[in-house]
Image 1 (cartoon, rainbow, N blue to C red):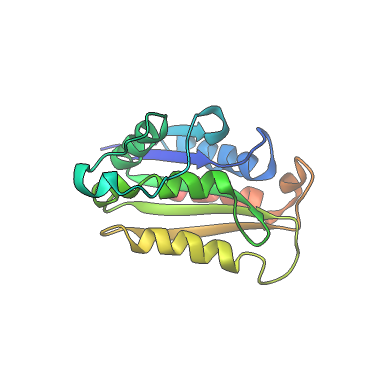
Image 2: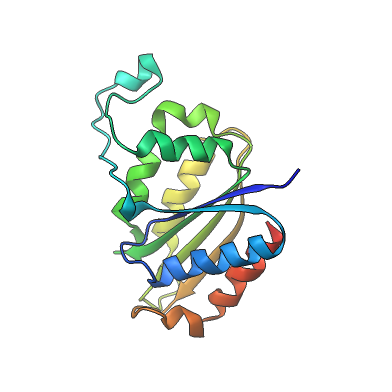
Length: 178
């Protein structure tokens, strides 16, 4: 069976550094014969979780937007790639929003393999610590989920800088390995 890979790019700009890593990962996975779908979150209408509790009893969200269709793709995927620029040492709001909106369906997102693609302008060794705490916390809530690999593009700010960073090639390799 061919693995289904879902790549979720939370970059606010197409062609930004974390989005470019998504394309590299996809290229590696496609070259290895996997079925790949990339979602660019900025193209979707996704509201913030209201914390209303409706999903606790109904196991669906009361909001009518694009989040359930994205989460459905997560449920159907074998491999999920989450990519985000790191803002103020954490994942961006776009990625956090879709993670929060997984709540009604999180028990269905099980036995997944996760890859994280992160980029940051900062060169500090701990620049990704809080982002990893957020992402690891999400994966810990999912039955049988595991983190396969984390790729960090450090010290990149301007578009396309990632192409000169070792994370660029690492993303292609990881796509082929997933």
